Image (cartoon, rainbow, N blue to C red; front, side, top):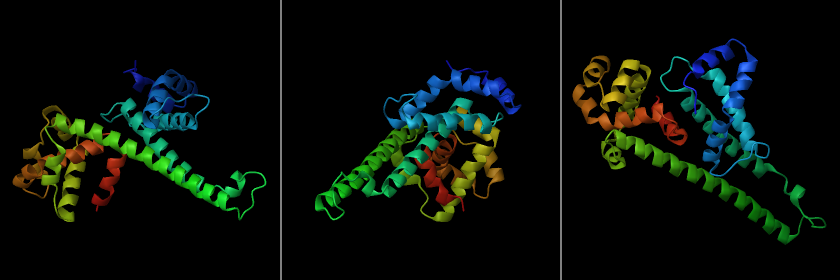
Length: 244
């Protein structure tokens, strides 16, 4: 079971107590393995899988970077860091695999001009790329499924977003800024999570759009907030073009 009092130990880690850091990594190794296996979509082994090493480093990073003042729990934050680092690792492996000299994999006695070897090389490269694309597609599908379930808690369906999505970039950028404001202001964030509604009255006093516009974009703004507050790595990439 996860320790709800972990913040006490995190304070000790920040004070330089490395024995506490080691204790936390050992104590929560089952959590780390669980997140790793879920992200990799397979069972993982502590001593055999590089992905576990990546996850351990990511958990250690989370110990240092978690904001003790934020509302999200440490474990939500740690899971996000682990997932992100693993996805970065998958991408790195895919790139480096493309760069491996085929000569190092050529069978003994096989000539550079051997047509069979050339075909094998192409087949191998295609196989690697296809595997990576399949893994990425599966993670995207799982993330979208989780996001859909979260939207339903707020009474929102995907088709609602298609209908309510702003058509112009400036309108999307404004919606992004409003969503960011909600995430950064604890009272707004708490109100939304508790009531599943936007704090329209207070927002209308603080942003440059009317309450009527806020009401019209309600579902879209809430959908952005859910992405910002959640562990949706791929969907967060969608937000990058909305910051300006």
